[in-house]
Image 1 (spheres, rainbow, N blue to C red):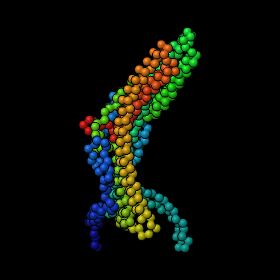
Image 2: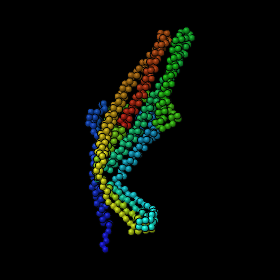
Image 3: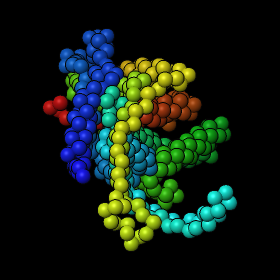
Image 4: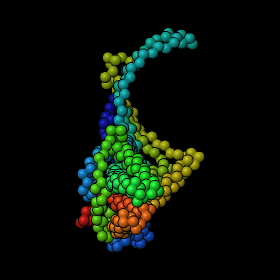
Length: 481
């Protein structure tokens, strides 16, 4: 009797299948990704006074650091650090990042063989066969084994799908950094707006005290016959108007305080922030001359848009590979017996293996439609990437322009404050000597307090604009940059 062994045959089969997998693994249909280049932007667009333009290479992974410390405000440092650690928006973005990474892991698992184990036990009874007269009987069935399956990625469908999932995970990471930067910038914006209100409130409170003294003076002059009731009523109205201004400022400050509480993930009713009128009077940190366009490389939203293009490009290849055959290798082995005591005997060993080939012959145009959709999605992603880059330039240009114009306004308002305050002093002296009416005093003091409040508002707007500029360039900057 002739005998033979299966081991050499299985070994040769495994070697052949591995060689086939290696040969097919080198082919990946669809376009290889190249980062979109917008020559019209790169050749013509740069910031005013900037000679350091170069094509952007996203560096959003570069640590942003605690950029808010450039303002030297301890209260802002605490708020920004707390928001960075506890912000709900950042936690949401982090959860989405973990989801994207898990999805990439799921897609990447398809590059490897899948091995599953199986075990079964059953008991069944057959009915009596009336035609043959065979009696009914009961039987057992026991099995234990495993199956191995592996899709040969001949056309790169699995690799393209994995490539797209990896790009989406990188985009989710950029979105997380963007969420952090947005929260930090929002904290700074609300904080500086609140401090500007603190400084404005201090002016209004000082004005209220001044109005009260004026009212007492006017009322005394009326008692002595040197003034009129009209002057007294005008003084009372001016005092009430100032008290109304204080209530309005308190209302707006409360709204900003509540917004900061939410950003820091604090209970709004228990969140408190002491008044500090001096913080709004600080000068914003200087902007380096010729702010380099390369700073935009650190913008995480631009990196996210660019990674979306990469994902869409990979999906084009996956859609194209769907037109071609799918080859799956399958192998199974194990034991099967009706007697559990004989389950692991050589006679009960069984195995099977072989390839499975599927090829779409007719699917009603579904694959072509899916391919066209993937091409359209890639075009959409490229357009959105370009729009994001242009929007980034607009934001930086707008912030730089705002800072320049606000600095001019600040200088002009400082001169106006000095002049109007001096004018109010002179008019008040003339009123006491009887040369001017009380209406002249009111007009002069209104102008003075209005200029002082506007000066504080402009100072606050400068700080807000500087915080928005930090966000627009993707984080803070250092002088050597």
